[in-house]
Length: 107
Image (cartoon, rainbow, N blue to C red; front, side, top):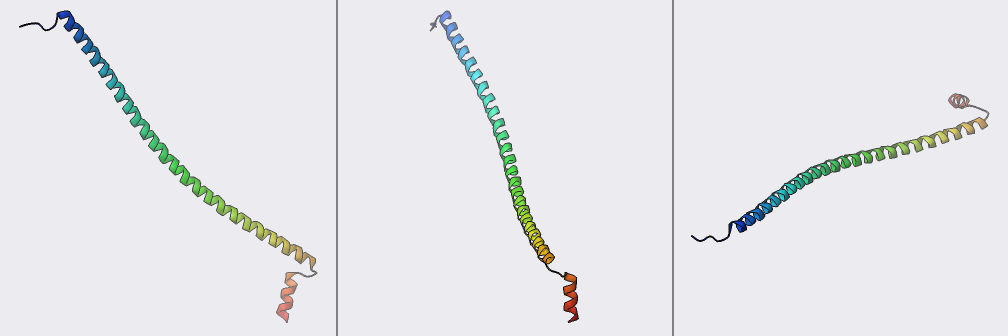
């Protein structure tokens, strides 16, 4: 049987093949690590998006409460202003509510 290549040539070939295999293994390990990190980042992103959605819902509820309270405050301020106007009007008169009620009841 005839030898196809010399021993030195085969050794170089095996060395190159071994280096190539080691490089491929390293690249595969790096890819696996990157895939794991990507998966972790995707989960973190999903968690943060869920938290953001909850915060937006809470903000909408808070905005609605603020709007309702603002309207209520405006109504109370208007009522107070109306009452102040009535007091000023009644102070200008020479009689009070009690006298008016008594007079109406008597007639």
